[in-house]
Length: 168
Image 1 (cartoon, one colour):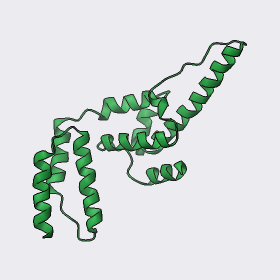
Image 2 (spheres, rainbow, N blue to C red):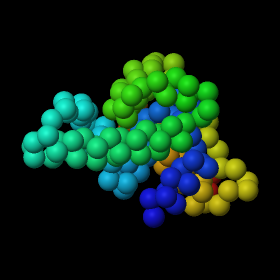
Image 3 (tube, rainbow, N blue to C red):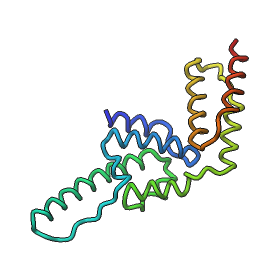
C-alpha cells in the first residue's frame, strides 16, 4: 500500500517551494505509513568499533535506523520538483533535509500569505469541475491558509456567502 501512495505522490503535486506547508503534512503521513517517520525526530550516529553483545545491538539498531532514513530521504526526494532535489541531496539525513526545507520554505512571509488569501478570495468553480472537486479545491486552499496560521473566520464566512450566492 505504501508503494502505491509513493507512486501517487510522485505523480501528483510535488514540492515546488510554494506548497511547503501542505507537502510537509502529506510527507509526514506518508512516512508514518512507511513506518519511517521517527527518522525525522531522531538522528543516530554510527557506533564505534567493538565486538561485545552491546556493540552488536547498537550496530544493528543503527543499521535499521540508517535503512529507514534512506527510505525517508528517497521518499522526500521523489516528492520534490527536480530543481529542488539538488538543494537537498547533500543533506546526510532525512531530519537534516526536512530542517533545510523548513528553513527555506517553512516561514510564511506576508507576501506568501497575501498570495494564498488572494487565491482563495478569487477562486471560482470551474465549469468542467464537479461540485465535489470544487469543494475539494476550496478545502485544500483553506488548509493551506490554516497551515500558514491565517485566521479563517472572515475569509470562511465571506467565501461561504459567495458560494451560496453562486449555487443557489
